[in-house]
Image (tube, rainbow, N blue to C red):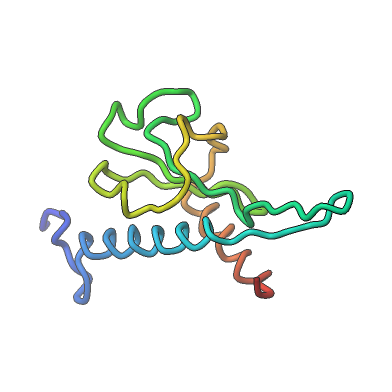
Amino acid sequence: MEKINENTSDGYHTFKELYEFRKVYNAALFNEWAKIYTGKFDQGIMDFKPKYDVHKSWKHNDGELCFGGGWFIVVAILPDGQISNHYEAKDWNLFEIPEVEKAKYPFDGHTGTDVLERLKNLNKNYNGI
């Protein structure tokens, strides 16, 4: 059996390419979310809040460095819960989102399946900005 590595291909893309696509799509989406604010009047004053809370940090919510260092986490809080990913330090500037000392929220235990469902639900419920 052939060894599976980053150059393994499905005939169209390698794993390395697919992970790069995922990272760049993730950055584009989080960067856009960081720019979107919604407003409500509260006692006659317009109160603006981010549509989704997105942030990045070198540390998990418990204060520990991600994977011992050299990695960071990006987190978004959606109506159905968290989504998050980890990336290498070299990709820090790709994410133009608020930086925090440590991730704001404890990990909610989400799986890849949960993340996909949460993102699909956003698409189902999308009604414009």
